[in-house]
Amino acid sequence: MRNKKTRCAFYPAWEYRREVEDLNALSDQGWQLEKGGCFRSRFYRDESVRYRYALDYNTQIDDPVRYRDTFAEQGWQFVSDTFNGWHYFRKVYDPALPPEEYEIYTDDSSVRDMSDRWSRLGYAFGVIELVCAAMNLFVLLRHPSITNIAMALACLWLGVMILVGARRIRRPETAGRPKKSMGWCFAVVFALLAVGLVFGLVHSEATADSEYVYDPAGEPWTWQIHVSLPDFYTLDVEADTDAYVDITVTNHRNGKELAALGGGWDLRAKGVMFLLPGTYDVTTQYADGTEPGTTGMFRYEID
Image (cartoon, rainbow, N blue to C red; front, side, top):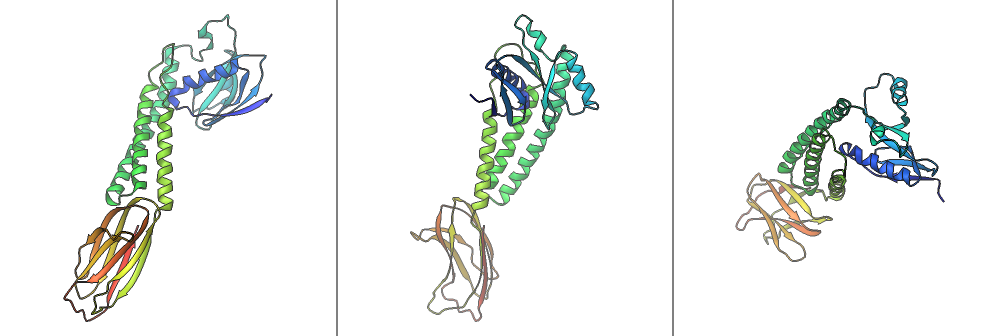
């Protein structure tokens, strides 16, 4: 039988009571906490004892020794702490003692002080995330892409979730079943960030410069682009020519026209398209009836 194990779990700050209950349940099964963590905790096997755990949140400890001695005087044994201010304590469990004996705080004001410390931090981070969501929305409006959509939604979702959690932690939970876990909300955030990362890394980008000499036969010049992932793509075209030109984007497989950029002299055009994986043709052609006397210079960029 294993004597040690690692458990991966994530608890939002406002669900610290749920984490305590899980630690208590594991202790009843013979698994005692060795080191607690934000995402991963280590346990060792010891069926000879049962503990009841408690968590304290404090980022402003001037004297760590005195801080731990204060809890030790009340029978609490320090286990470990985390980088973001959570401290794990435990006390040997005696079924004959009342439940209040295993509450780390002895009055409502202490609980409220702890809750206020985290809620202030939560409100600050929530507002920051909403500002980031607004910035990503601004970028999205200027440059549509699945990456920007995912990032804007992730920031918005995370900001709202943190603000809700900061509000919840200020409400002391009564005895009984704790509120439903919001861990699935973080899974949504991680999924959106993963989508944004994948589409950001694999998103197709290409640039080309060309000369397009007038051909009496009217033959066009074609630039091909290859798309790896479905996404919104922006085509920028700059042209310096003395004759009217037309630029179109078509599906190479079936010839279907997807976009037609306005033609003209000294052309500066931009088109936003949603493209599926495949090959596409960007075709440039002088308009019928024109006879330019010089070579046209063109620059194409898609991202």
